[in-house]
Image (cartoon, rainbow, N blue to C red; front, side, top):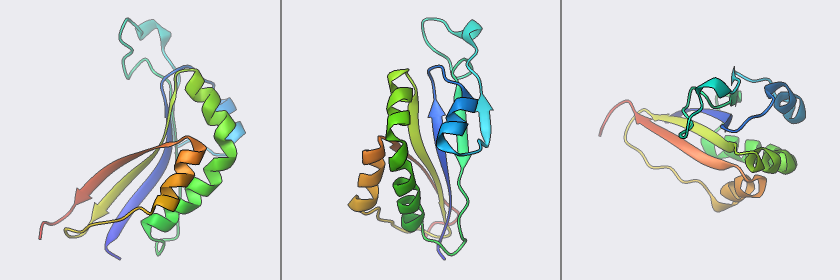
Length: 133
């Protein structure tokens, strides 16, 4: 396979209970940070904002588009939770870190992306290439 990826659901900003989020989503967080209201000024810093992240696990033979499709479909049932978090000032995103072994292109089908839109989850990408050429 010409790709190596990780996919995480990240919730950042606002003020929320990580325990309530974990319970509502049925997911165990990989990283959790409670909001530190003592560090908030006129401009909210990253250190002050709440943060919750769950890293998904996949079969190593699964392609990126298939993995995003599975996650997107699963996330659509939580749209009400995501709307509540967003109304409270949080951002909800699917974070994808993708490493190519060589220079390559990749397509994300509109049907797959529509599931994320239906769930009201943004897509964030970090792309890496081990070699150029």
